Image 1: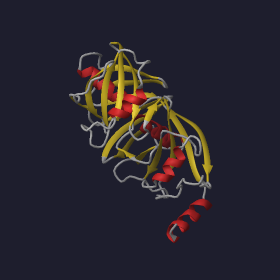
Image 2: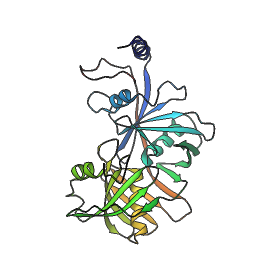
Image 3: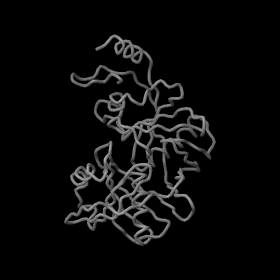
Image 4: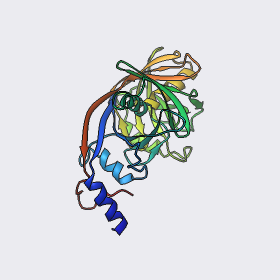
Amino acid sequence: MSEVRMRVGAMLSQQPFRFVKAQAAGNDFVIFDNRDGRIRPDWRAFVRWVCDRHYGIGADGVILIENSSVADFRYVHLNSDGSPAGMCGNGSRCALRFVHEELGFAPLLRFEIGGRIYRGSVSGDEVTVEFPDRPHVEPPPAVQGSDWRPLASVFVGVPHLVLVVEDLDGMDVAAIGRELRHHPSFPEGTNVDFLSVLDRETLAVRTYERGVEAETLACGTGALASAAAAWKAGLVASVVRVRFRGGELRVDFSREVARLSGPAHLVFRGEFQLPRLPEGWDGSPR
């Protein structure tokens, strides 16, 4: 280990990291107030340890709240493998809950991520994010399965491949999602959504998330992408409920902007110092 890394590791071990755990429909995140810039987004090993459900705190991703010169705050989202995400629907709603309840921000907010400005609001249990543009829906790549068919490729700040299935509960989301996640039509990989239409106002969805590399209990951009694909295909109305295993979200295309709404809650607060990790685990920031 270099002298610089040793000095950084010693400094970090002496100062506790304070965090808040949050969840939206079971999609869970560890949030840090990073307005002092202490945590760097390229600390991939740090993020992996925080998200590890055995050695760390456990989460689908890490959220950094930072200062912004163009909005109320800058939102940085890091997947559980340490990779950055251009947007996260449920993560952004948890971030809104955090800055409102923990930092005292107003209930109507603007935030930036990936060079774009989003609007959000907190009202009781409900947290809503307005996307500046409606999802970009395109024909899917030429893929086909025995018990699913591709519906659309959708971009909502991050890419999604939306599939229509008959038996959603019986789908092997992990195996199929892992295979399609690296399809050559998506140079940077894609999230994969498995969709079943329940009626004109209700969808059931399961999502394999890129960067988490597993199915999550819910996915906000997956809800938006699935609803957009189904709406464009004429399968559902412009306002639709999207049911995940972790809970229900609502997507609204009835206005000029797309809106994603649902509950988002802070679960607990805590602090930690970087531990002595098991042999073979590089837990130092890099």
